[in-house]
Image 1 (cartoon, rainbow, N blue to C red):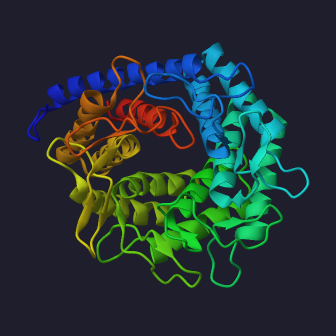
Image 2 (image 1 turned 30 degrees about the horizontal axis):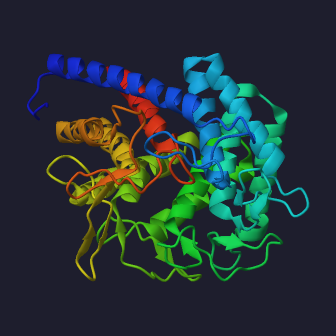
Length: 409
């Protein structure tokens, strides 16, 4: 492992090795999904695959998982040019178009059953955002006008039904008919509040990716507005952690800290500002990237892994190390190294990667485990691939490291 006093020549060797390793891992993950998740019986992809690579054939299929597969294989096809990856992106596109689109009420369903029939018809804005994210990347790859048209339709749905015209920001979820719904949560562990950082983060992520293929003035204004919302409401100016759950009027409703979301937002918000080329927001979010990354680092363990969550009111740490926060840490700390030149951040990015290789990569069956507990024992009750476990965080980390290291060296 490197030290902070390394010389430039050594640094170039370390960065070159980092780039080569993540490229190999990127291909490995893509090959895993190509070989183990294709549902030949009912179409699309299995809703769940366990750690032994055995599919749960009757598992539900979610819009988030399918959209993330669409984004991952579209982005990978663009960057690698592999025909097999293009075909899998096409498969994800076709499955979403055939099974998830609500042609009567607009938007996309949250989930379908293993046969492709509607299972949960709620309109979760998080799901619409990820569909935009995947479809806009697919449009970059394919230039299929249907993908861009769907992005525009979903953008209109979000703005028409979810945007809060009184206080700003976006409400979480609705019925199929776009009525307010009692249970707004993405999952059982979330607080049942009308506005969440997580959904807003993935709306701006989706909007920025859409803007890269559709530079619409109104869309740009919405991205700017979201950057302003994060500055005013989601970035806690006392701690520089993110405020996760808020009510309609932006009153904070939870003190929970999510280290993974901290480090993800640290780099992603800056990238959104860069996509719309807003110099003022770029300046603001370069500063915030460092501040938020420093706060996220409070969740680091001595082995380089990032703990999951912390509840300061009860002084309770969720002593689990899930795979996706480690992937985001690779990007987030390297991003701060690019901003500051301080090698301690590069060291932490590399430590995150070492932790992933040592503890999370399944060297027998492929892909990454969901996570490990405080004793570094694998969480075997979780999916290898599933409703929430997708190749998006891991492959995106590999892509970002490739791109950023290339820019550095």
